[in-house]
Image 1 (cartoon, rainbow, N blue to C red):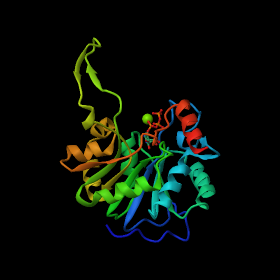
Image 2: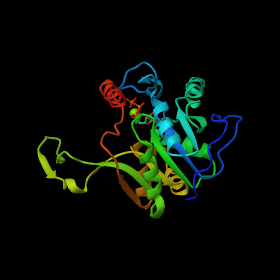
Image 3: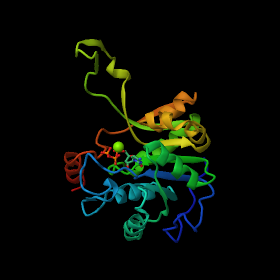
Image 4: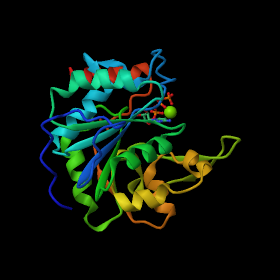
Length: 247
Ligand code: CTP
Ligand code: MG
């Protein structure tokens, strides 16, 4: 992969009559969920975390990892709010930003962001809901792409995992040493991701992570060890946990 391009001197470029990303590597940040389980009355990505929108923390880490550009998928109808939130935050980091409308499912949001990213060699997909991902984790996932179609952040499983039937009777205990809890960032060869996402809406809807789509298309996916502290903010409890980690 070529080295990342120098960051734009004009940090905010919005799709919709504006410039398209044309080369290198881009981050695709999915922020188009409604945040139902958090229950903040607005999309989770715009909820304040330690004084800034949740989304801003991820974008800062991406910029610090020297990824030059990011495409952010936001809920339909929230483009203006996103532009406002990002324009406020964009001054604090050098990152070319584009905003696109997300889809009905997470994978559709990824597909929309990928389409807007233009001709990239590599992309790194990240959930806006993971504000604690470090720049170093972005760098390591991108570097691990060398011999694979995808390289995904994952934490070793520390609990013992058992399988049980509908009657709650245990049928199997898994070998924990081979189990990984999958996170984002997830880095992809852009062409592999594009092909993997070119599937019917029902398959996209069933995907809880994009790497699975690459796996089912026969691609090679490797895990990159990440700390369990890279949590996904789902509930109010998670938001508080993230807040104490940042404070
Ligand atoms: N996401 C997205 N488009 C969707 C659904 C989810 O871009 N149609 C994004 C979310 O914004 C989030 C990430 O995917 O950054 C992980 O999803 P999740 O944690 O489930 O977030 P929400 O869907 O917003 O939360 P909830 O399921 O509680 O409504
Ligand atoms: Mg969701």
